[in-house]
Image (cartoon, rainbow, N blue to C red; front, top):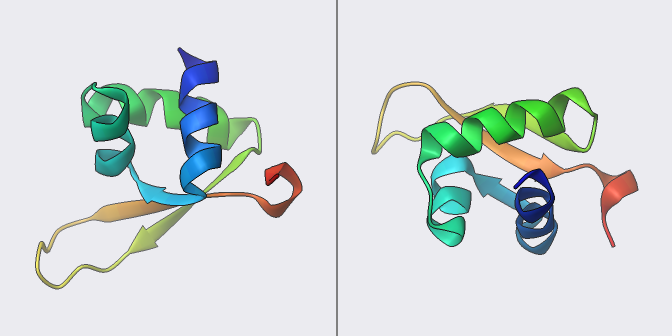
Length: 69
């Protein structure tokens, strides 16, 4: 599962958990748990993003340059 998540992250390069969840056919909560592991491993960067339309706390993710193909 983590490998599949990482592969999809590599394809997207920059994304939100909801986008990755939709791509993999799972819930944002499930993806967030997987992304925590990728962030801890240093493969993915987590950044807070501002979305005036949605409001609330939201994060964007990006594959770190050393891991890009």
